[in-house]
Length: 511
Image (cartoon, rainbow, N blue to C red):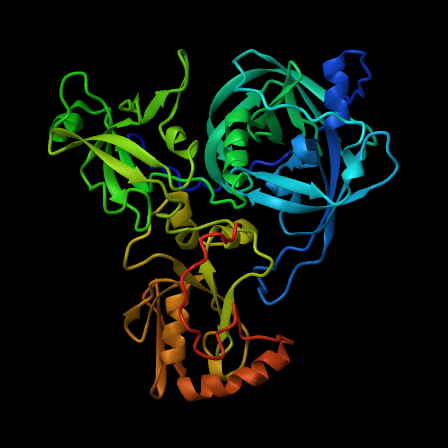
């Protein structure tokens, strides 16, 4: 958790759930003659998704399917923009327009969980017949009057919420538990309207997303600059994600701290205290550097930059608003000497990666012990049951290091005589295998596969050890899998034969 006087660039937010609350609302279906209103209503669609998410408590299986309803908006080219959380883990997606009796099949073309945005492609072009796509507008101004359109729960027609923009700032996106640019409306957004357009003068200025759980009568939406960044990311046929600077930093509001860093006069900035392995700052920035500017924007001592003439925003936005691979000039003080460095923007650097909302959860069963990588997918699925030691790296935005790029947890134990004495253990972090520190989940699997001798020792973060008879643990696996009706002992599966190395295809990338 952030401490007073110290903040870190949020690789992801602290674990505080923000969801659309089911609050009583007076829903009004509008049928005005105003052309902007009629176009917005015609372009707003209902999204019905059947989801089948993995079960992180029993990662070899999925949870039961369930149906969800959200909203979306028609864009140029017949595609539909909606929230990522509306279609995450979807196995079926159908779209419906107001006044039409049929549902139309669609699929996810591009998705970016960090921005909570997704583009859907409709199978039949006739879906958009008679509707005009809405153009994308700009960042809404404070106190601007906004109409948010959507299909509330159980509604058969488009409804609208009217309000004014009360805040524009960095805040938590509940879907991925990260912080991004967000706008807030002084009116509740109807449940089920997630993914519906926020419109000013006939243009999309945002996309409805969530309701803050600490504020009554308010709704939050993704502003147009975040949407524009996502659409530009997808324009080349793949989604690379939202880049970050990949460092931990400390504010410089203390005069003594500023002086000790060589910051004098009217200079301002923040001090680099950690550098994430694989992040944008890795190999370029150094611990102790003071970041004084990002591009052409000066960084204040509180870690903000100017958003416009009147507002300030977290200095992550000039980075988050760009694309992976962009080169960015950063002004620094190093040892009190002013200089400039160039960062190539990347997405890595965090110890807790993701979320990715995969079709299946990764796991490894060994001697009945179930191990899983600690990523945001695991944390989101099990957040209410995870102990502090597992949650802490996400809460503090811990950075990855060359020695440790990912944590691994012993999630649970499937009872068998080979693991007697450990059958009530679970949710402990793994430190090492036979004295070798675990670098990440892939490395952990290599250590298990390569272990030899009579015993295998798995050291946990509380200094306790799991010691198994190695030959017996391996021999017991078929019986354990049969007892618990599990098909595979691991996912992803280990390669059955050596695979020849080949150059990566620059035209393909998982999004």
